[in-house]
Image 1 (cartoon, rainbow, N blue to C red):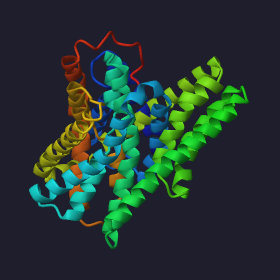
Image 2 (cartoon, rainbow, N blue to C red):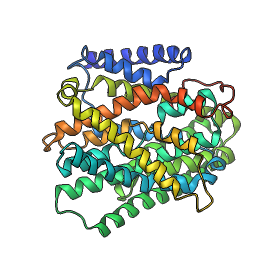
Image 3 (cartoon, rainbow, N blue to C red):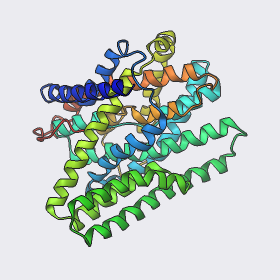
Length: 406
């Protein structure tokens, strides 16, 4: 068993290296190629791939990926879009869940409980493939920050909404007021806790000059923030995101020497590279093809519902910003809709449902179908769409690796 695990790990490293090499020489996003590789190999790996547990994703994989992305967010690019980010990451997640649940119940005949779980699972977006493409072709930095920041925050709020829905459906339904209070406590509490943790660690880095220690402190923020948030009954994901943003904008530029900053950037870039390889190859390799084939018509409709709900959330909510003097370009909105990919968070939420839960087979097929379609289809075409929507804004590609973080 140990030898099999080691062999799979070595094969994963080879696949990551070869795929990264191919991504550098093609226009396809690195993570899209990884997911396609995993999906193609899935029939050959049947029974040999370790079962992905949602705790592995939530406690090990996601904190590293989210922290690395948050570490690179520049506050100066976020200030002008705070209202848009907050609206999409809160009301947008709730609206997307409600639309998918309602349409899934009416159009697909799903039981309401099943439709709600499906909607909550695919409401959060994953920008990894999109941001990698945007960085390569050189879209405006503010658009890049908007896409990445929205996804980082809605990952946390999406987990909160899913948890509330799952708890309510498993017992007596929560009153709307109680659900709103729970949502506010988990989200605002997670952001506040993460900001305080990031500020405390930033103050420590000002008083020392030791690259190894300071790199370890960033790892503490990423992998200590999630369990700390869970222990204090707030969102652990939002705690990690807030800590990463504070350290990236305060601790790193103000408290680290240039050599330490370079070391921290290299460390997290490589960790994100490996974590992305694990996440997206395993997503592809564990696709339940038999389940998907059984529910193929439902999956097709489910993919359409997810895209329609994303469009309604983006176009509808951004229309509210116009009277406030914070309009978002319609061309940017088109990219936000098509770039609303689903990924590791949706998979983690799916796996958190008890194996014997009623209707799990249908939910599993729908979620996997939406995740795989968005990564392979939307992820591989969003660059083409960006070039046609923003020909006057896209500049020469920036030199970069097949950026694991985003």
